[in-house]
Each structure stands twice: as C-alpha cells, then as structure tokens.
Length: 305
Image (tube, rainbow, N blue to C red; front, side):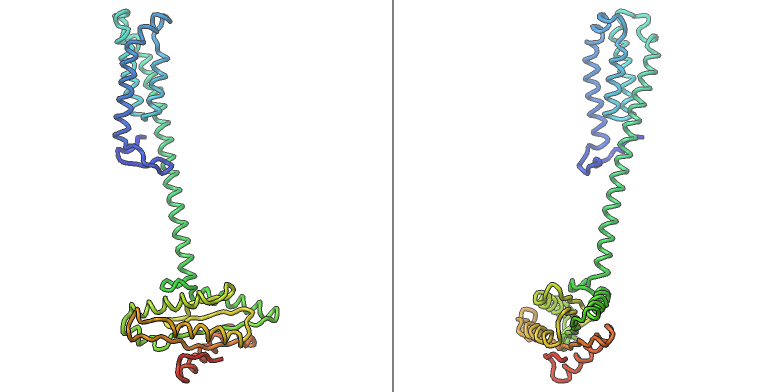
C-alpha cells in the first residue's frame, strides 16, 4: 500500500513531501548509510565473529518505516548485498550464498515494516479525510440551519422563525397576563422603487433593516414579513408604548438620507399595530396588515393602531 506520487498533506493538514520527493530522500539517505556500512561491517565481523545481520535488519526496519514498503524491500536487497560484498574478502566462497536466509529475513522485515507504515499512513489519511468531510457537513448543516431561519437579502429572521417565536411569546403573554404587540411596517410605494431599479430596491430593504434593527431592544424580534414589509414582536409592550416606538422608527426611515441611492428617492413607512390577545397570533398579524392598508389610505407615512 504505497503513498501516491503527488503533493499531499499530512493528517494534521500541513503540507507534506510528495511521494517522489520522499522516495528519493529516503533512498539517498539509505545509500549513505550502506556506504558507511561497507567500512563498519568488516570491523563488526572481526569483533563478533559473525555477520552483522542484526545491524542490517535494524537499518532496513528504520528505512522501511521512513520510506514505506517499496523502499523497505529495496534497502533489504541493498543491505544484504553490501554486507556480503564487505565480507567477501574473508569469506569469498560463501560471501553471497550463505546470506540467502538473511536476505529472506531482511525482505520480510523491510516489507512487513514498510507495509505497516503504509497502512498506518493510509488510515491516518482516511481519518483526516473523514474529519474534513465531517467539518464540511457541519458547515453545510449550519448554512442550512441559518437559511431556514434568516432572510438572505436583509439578514433578518424570516417568516418561519417569526411565526415560531410569535406563538411562544403569545403563549407566555397570555399565561402571565403581560402585554404583547405585533407591528407590521411596510415600505410605501416599494413596487415603484423596485421597478425603477431592482438594485436600489434591494438596498432600500437592507438599509431599512439596519435602521430598524439598531433601534429596537434586544428582547424585541424583527423579521422580514414579505417583499415590502417587516414585522415586529414587542413582548411586554402595551399598545401605546409600541405606537411611540414604531412612530420613532417611521421617522428615522423618513429622515434617512436616501439621496446616496437616487437623488429623487424618498422612502417612508406605513405601519399597523395589534395588541389584542383575544385574537389568535396569526389573526393579530392579519389585523396589523389591515391597519397598514388603512395608514396608506390615510396618506402613507403613518402608524395606525
């Protein structure tokens, strides 16, 4: 099981040597070791009285763990040849034939250690790939979760999340006898703005979203309601207090400098409020929408309750 000859990354995600560079580096290091062994083996032979087979096996094992199975087998052959050659002057007749069992053992050690090393690296690489896939899956899940709760254009909560929160806040207000107001704020003449320039229309919605979001409490919830409207959940807020807040929001939008988008552009809001908890939550929203139409019929740029 060999490492592909291409640029890779190690299991920690850091750049690693390509298989070709690794092969050459380990092969070159092995050659230097065997050249040194040409001088060392005769000395060991004279000191111990036997061929330094264990030294060959140790070097082969190290090189195989460093370079993999192919290099392990190659260096097993080189090691045995170097040992036989270095001792050939003293054992000319038996120099090569007597080392066949040692050669088989060296091949077994080099191939076995190298195989284990390659298998370990392959498992680590698979583990790294699995972790990468898991991270990608987590990112995709987070993206889908955000997409399910947020409006892509404005970054506000979407209608689905708004509805879920509304029913929770409605149940809490009814249970504890606390006031709750639902407000719908719609952009006046938005269809004309959007038809004039879709880009300007989108920017208007984004700017209004920023103005509204920066002007409400942390306990309030602002969401995009439809193409041209926003909706507010105002917990613990009676109708008169909600009217003051929404009128302030309306005024901020009207006084905003829209000339940066278009010299003749004027943007206003019409709003409707409902705090009647005897109505169902969805009916409260519809009542607020009805009051938005009433505000527009009365001249736009105003809040009706």
